[in-house]
Length: 327
Image: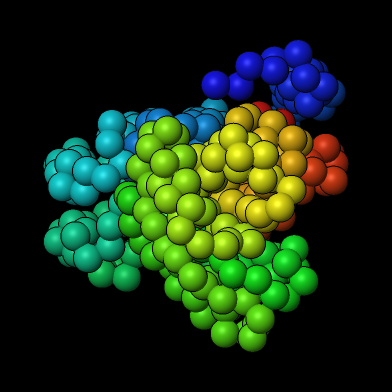
């Protein structure tokens, strides 16, 4: 799909990643390892696919090494399989883990699980997606509603406060997608010159998403597109690249991947809204251990959001975010 492997950006990303990996594996000063706790934590993810959830897992495994716990990881093959994830969550209660870290793909559907976990006095830490259908000990993740508003404001800035825009949402976007879209729609009201003219959904298949975006662009003039996750951002950017419209139609997307970073360098999109999944995985397990031990933990740990552009993607702090092995 991306054939220009000899491009400058590809080599730079490779060199930086190698350097940061070496720094992580061979640090100058190592922190002493914490005394082992013996706790067992269950980590349940929406899916095992994609860089995002792999980075969450990497952060969680770093906490395992630091605190000496047992970590059981479950992840669905299909991000949209709500009932499958719910069944996994209910089954995990039978093992009586010290705590459960859950990246849920729905809210209301997990009400019976949250009730049963509370009945058994098993703390639940929600990550990535906030849960309101029952009691959780903590939420670790970004404020997706505010991130949606920030995405619209960023787009308005690229358009000079005037233009017609479209939303391309993920068809399995769940809680996060709904909150991001609500934030975008509410923020549109702040700009009299910005008009939302279309909204479509895409699957994880880039080619199918390109066709959806093609349909949007064929039927009306669009000055900017907001895409709500990794897959939709790649699909939109690829269609803009095919049309050679990356410099004419602005694109603000969510999340990060090697493909998106290359497309960003090629000016096929302007901004990526990115959080730190590595830190999310690490902090969620850390607080799960504390909750399992009966210690007080924060009810909410809000992850900061970074706006990644072509101009700042190679800044050191952003490289640590985009290549989280250095955390």
